[in-house]
Amino acid sequence: MSYPPDPNNPYGAAPSGDYYGQKQQPAPGYGYPQQQPAPGYGYPQQQPYPAAPGMPGGGPQQGMPAQAVTARVLLFVAGSLWALMGLLMLIGSLAAQSMLEEMDVADSGEAVGVGLLLFLLFGGLAALHIVPASMFGKGGTGARVTGIIASSLNSLVALLALLGGASDGNAAGVVISILWTATAVVTVIFLAMGPTGAWFNRPRY
Image 1 (cartoon, rainbow, N blue to C red):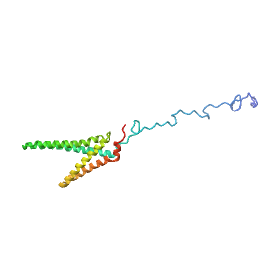
Image 2 (cartoon, rainbow, N blue to C red):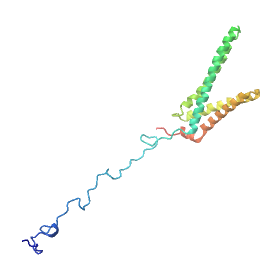
Image 3 (spheres, rainbow, N blue to C red):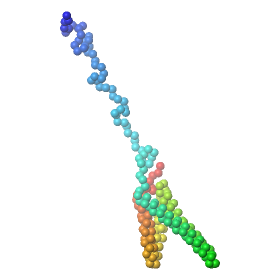
Image 4 (cartoon, rainbow, N blue to C red):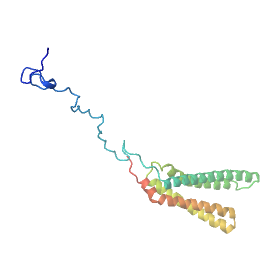
């Protein structure tokens, strides 16, 4: 027959699982704060310092502005037309020389000389347009200034052609000259605008 434990007995079992007067501590995990996880598991990581734009690892560079892109395309088109005109002049002079030789004209060689001179002149104008246009991606202020000079010369020639076509009453020549002058002037304006200048003056690393 069992008897209830005597509360005054110091050697008896303590209530609630205490033995010898000492309270047993609960095992970790039952009400005690858990060990904090190592950094990287739920804790925000330190953000790296952003690099400057244009430097390795930096933000993306701003692309070429629309004004510069348009001016570049117009320079390529104008240069290609000048090169084509020079080639046609050379071919025409050779054909004229052949015809003059068949007609036994004494000064038949002058046609080739004139055609060669025009070919060199138009070829130089073509290079003056195409070379700076090809340098828009990496070129500096020199490419922009050269493009402005080339477009200014192009607009001057187009204006002279417009005045000549108007005086001759050539309607088709007038229309072509107007378009020619307009594209040349637009190229100069786009090259002189602020976004285009900022593009050519951008820092390079």
